[in-house]
Amino acid sequence: RPRGEGQPPPEGGPECSCPEEPGGRGGRRLRTAFSAEQLSTLESSFQRQQYLGAAERRKLAGRMRLSEVQIKTWFQNRRMKLKRQM
Image 1 (tube, rainbow, N blue to C red):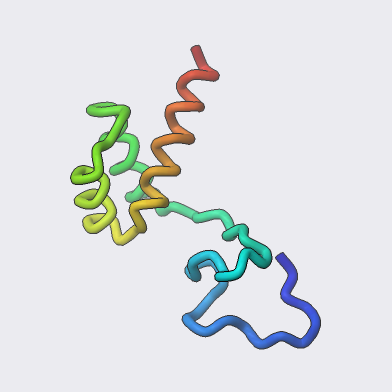
Image 2 (cartoon, one colour):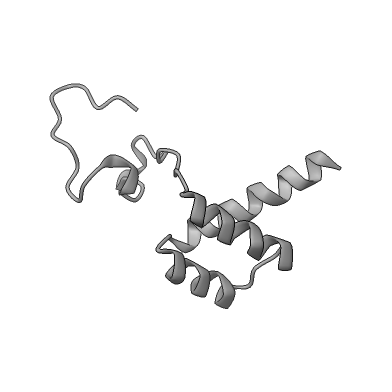
């Protein structure tokens, strides 16, 4: 989303790594670009288990240096992709 209007960048680095802005203004994050290694790990986890519990999600997120929400969303999207393919 364009920043415009002379606003300084948000603190904490690039926009894509910041959590959603408080107050509901412009509440969409930029798309996460997963590395090839992260995708490989996610896919192999998905092949073993299509649904992750909270403990598995926390463990995977910690190992991959991603947020639990990113892991959860990836699994939701992957299940939808599988459903569309069937």
